Image (tube, rainbow, N blue to C red; front, side):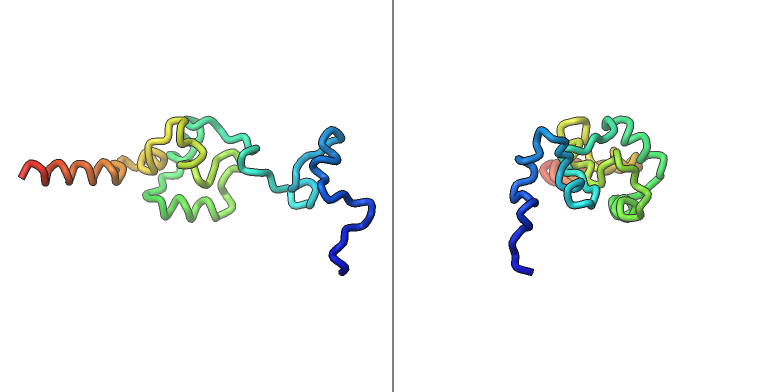
Amino acid sequence: MSGRLPSDIPVGPSRVYKDQGWAGWGDWLGTGAIANFLIKYRPFAQARSFVWKLKLRNVYEWRDFTKSGHLPSDIPATPDRTYRDKGWAGYSDWLGNGRPPRRKIRAKRKSSHDED
């Protein structure tokens, strides 16, 4: 292969086909991939409600679930990033397992040491 594109393939297809039906790189390359920032996810409360029904116990089980092929396409594998400013309160809240976030535990430990 010479490293050169055929004359009928543009170097910048997103610019060339911008107003002619450009649907993204995943479409162009045939992978079907969609850029993360373009994915439409469920609202936080609906996504969290779905996750609670899974009865996962910890973040390790969450990560295993996200890799299992059963994660709906409208629920993010990294909810801490997706919902950062949209209700995110930690993995304990996300999983609904009743455990306080680690930072609250650390803060509580620190304040009890300060009282000594």
